[in-house]
Image 1 (tube, rainbow, N blue to C red):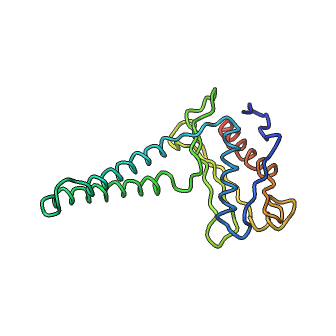
Image 2 (tube, rainbow, N blue to C red):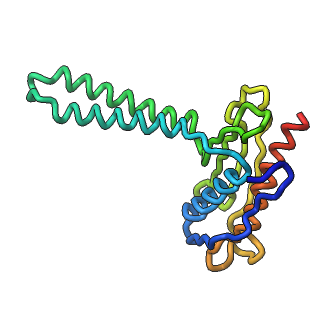
Image 3 (tube, rainbow, N blue to C red):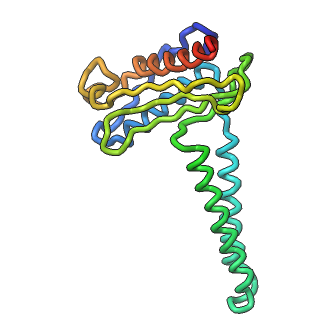
Length: 199
């Protein structure tokens, strides 16, 4: 963990390799690295949304199992089956709404760092649109209505330019030059925090 102003860049990086012809592989590797950077800056992951999704998914499975193994045969259990089907559909719609409304493109939700005066954590989200080489990273408040929230900060980098230049974020072999990317993300987090102080 790093205090304010201290650089949290790790001393030793493990080599992370991506298939440069697969944009999903590149995005996954960058997203993984971003999660590591955020955690190294003192933010802990907020798993409440994931826990809710797991609980709802478990309920959906329980409903399906109950409908499948209900002791009565079909004509006698038709009302029960209709109820199970309705519940199954409703619970899946709730899961979809959570994904589209709350989760969106989020990589990680965080709690505020320990000892912080902020009452809200961060939502880190990224996009690498289909047929595009522009990787977009956004850091925003987990609670935009909070008094300690402020404008999100963004950066957009071309994955193609990063791949083509040795001094970019990937080598020709697909190995992430993690130190450079780590510093980019740290700078964006610092920009977000300094934006809050200057508000």
